Length: 318
Image (tube, rainbow, N blue to C red; front, side, top):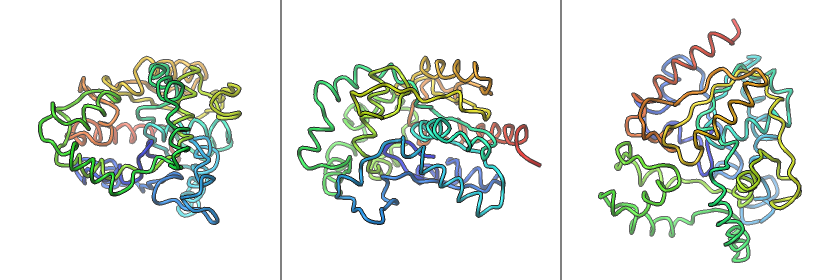
């Protein structure tokens, strides 16, 4: 499952020799790529995307409604009793939310492989304070009539053509800004693909940003109840009963190592932690490298498939 501003295409965009969707399929797995509400693939029976009510959701709704519905669909079509879930970034946040809110779904999951899990975000507190308290970006944008984080085609093309297609790393303002957030790794930046990747960023709700901000500001994996400044109500991670592997990037500045270790301790205390380790041995491996690294297949994807084989063989059904 994809991350914030991402979609199912993130797992195939780098091609058959690099992307996990292809390589898992080549290994014999039945691969289902999900899309969460907010992406261009999601609609509503009654509300248009221009209606502010359409965007009244965060990863809480992803976890409570969207992922359970998709799991049920996969199991109904395949006739299997369980599946193995792989999540990246917000795709992990939504999974942990699901298990907290819908613990009966433990019975439908073999194991969980969490890539760059976004659960504790204390390291992002200064940025959250700047965006949400000092500048109050979401509400300012709403007041300007921007109901969501939707990148209009004309604005996207202007930005991409003016500042995001510079071949010199030092002059590329897009990548300098991105790397300030996720960790610098120019060596693994596939320049030929970057404009394609940036052009396919997906819409998201302001509440998603605010909910992650609430986690960063409070230091608690908390629900959205009562809003950004409302009561802190921690999600119950002890409801997770399936084996969990946590894979992090050594240079990931967004889901930073110390925060992964904090999550690992909680999961270990409840007896479900299978493993916590770097995703690969490249020291500059950052948050985006999990899906977009130039040498993704060799560095990460093929070793990951071996780990998935191990988890499936150990915990899967015969």
